[in-house]
Length: 91
Image 1 (tube, rainbow, N blue to C red):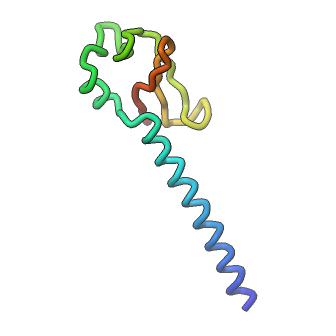
Image 2 (tube, helix red, strand yellow):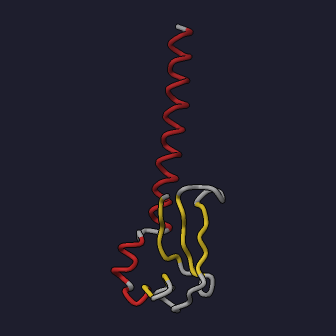
Image 3 (cartoon, one colour):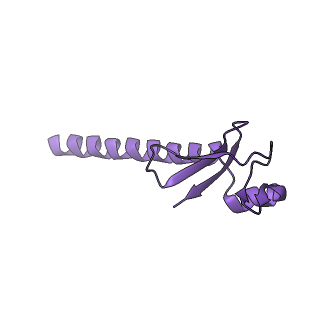
């Protein structure tokens, strides 16, 4: 009986961890839904000779931040001038 309770507890903990990981990934896609390719398809004028610009204000000053921390491989690109969320990237 004790081992059954311990197994149930362990499965509950694993289930809770997977739930929160799934929820975090869902928020990742909701915050920055566009990939670079879909962003450029939506805003073709954002592709310039010197790189990418903001499709809203045309600024070339962009910030590239990690999703959870500075070294996160999931990157969020936003405009420094108008603070628009532009696209996401994975390294």
